Image (tube, helix red, strand yellow):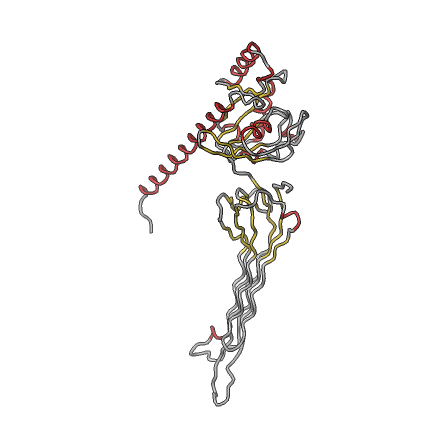
Length: 351
């Protein structure tokens, strides 16, 4: 299945049906009075987050979604039928964005979450609604409300616990293949990964999701290489795993390039917790490992782990470090939620 994480759709909710002007006409009933029914409501356009999807490819082949109009009211106090809704099934992690490509209407982060993108128009009242003691034969009815027509963008941001970062050929796909059942493309040339990949990784009976994105190069924020189009997929991660190729010739320069691109991307991505790992140590001797690690730690300003995705050396230690960061992030969220609930309880009562 082809991966697609950005799509444009055109939607329109249904218009409400018009009310009916009608009078009861029956034999031997001289004053039947008004009996016009109301119009039916128009259908709405609703987005629903489903678990079985991980791409927006369905919206490449269908971009127009129009809900049904409500039926008009009829005599004998008959109300028109309500128009059918249109359901947009989107993957979990999809953002619904307005036409300006900036305003986020809703972030679909949970399975089963629903959001009404465009509400159907209300049906008009029939003349039965306008009957009164001074107007016993009203000859007026309301037209139904028009539906809403708009254009929206769908942007998918994969939901994962760990995001992989690094230069092309830093060993990200090899790490994902070695630690999970995912089978990303692995080759000895740059940009073998063209679309994000997800893998479920387990360590010490604890599982978490790892997202692998195409490698970044210098100038990615300006559109070089594949650009920073896929960095959005690691925005939701609890921790970033930054892999540095120890055999690249300039590991420190590679590290600083990635950090510079994260800062140029903006947001909180550059401030997320990171685990920096020097990869491909199987191709280095002990002296080279110690020298490169020392240089990296001086640039990082903190500890740097070593690993080999091919020989799986120290891979378990890296997974445990990631798990500890994920647990710490969940603890921070629980504390923040508890503080927020406490503040709500202490707030003064308002009618």
